[in-house]
Amino acid sequence: MLVHFRLTVPADLTTAVRDLLLAHSATTNVTVQEGAVLRPEGDLVESDVAREEAGSVLTALRDLGLAERGGIVLTTPTGTPFTEARRLERAAPGHPDDAVIWESVEAQAHGGAVPTLSFYIFLVIAVALAGIAVVTDSAVLVVGAMVVGPEFSAIAAACAGIVLGRWSLVLRSLRLLVLSFGFAILVVTILALVAHATGLLATADVTRPRPNTGFIWHPDAWSFIVALLAGAAGALALAIERASTMVGVFISVTTVPAAGNLALGLAVWEKTEILGSLAQLAANIGGMLLSGTLLLLLVRSSWPWLVDLSEQIFRTGQRGAR
Image 1: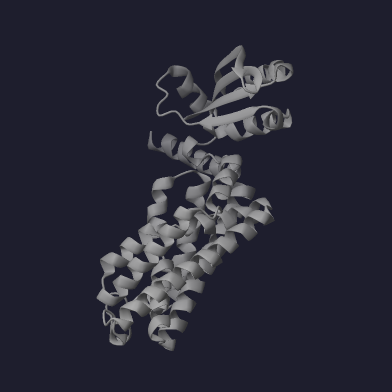
Image 2: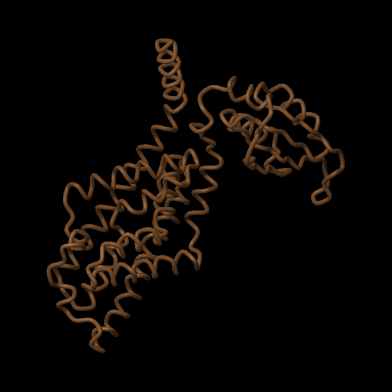
């Protein structure tokens, strides 16, 4: 797998950028179009880089000052069916699927900490779905609510911020979590109060035995263990850009369902439900923050060594199989 670099370069930096790319062993298809860029004025330089080495090339470009004076755009091609691409992939250490580009991780983290209108709306809808799941005792709706909930992006952003030392990012992420959950719970509580006043919701709907959804406000050791595993999986998926894995993270933890149950507990003022839901919410968020941070610390400190070790083991196994 290659990463395509599209660089907007001031004319006085073009020679240095071109020489850097030509000297690097993990680059190919290096092209220079002088004067092609109109705003800001400069040259267009492009190159394809083995994903495993994209981080080192990006760091070198930043050291030249290109990030401040020009432009750097990275894209991933849908396919690279040519011989040189396969040669670069074989020559680069590790496997492309294990490559971590920390600049990309940080960019995703910053995006996950932005308090957008859509984030709030998705969370309100998710918590409302979770509330309906409680009333109807529907496990299917619980899963639906967990998939709709966008909260893991803010949790992952906080983990990345801690590991990268971006404390303003950590504060923004935690603030987004607190404010968005507070807002969503408030909205669903008000809706539940209206439903209770009109007879659509009865206290018994919340307090009765619920074999399919009672687990969402009964935190135990397994709840915390699941949160730890989900947080680690989500952090690794963020680091190696494996978006499909995120779905498994969403439907593993009962963060949003606990918030929905909390809103209903507040509406009917059932203290047991309130306290249990708060405990579940804290266990899930705390567990994901802890394991996500530890996993990213491991990747930050030891990932290249672990990738090299796994590659050696794989090659040894291949030779033994022959």
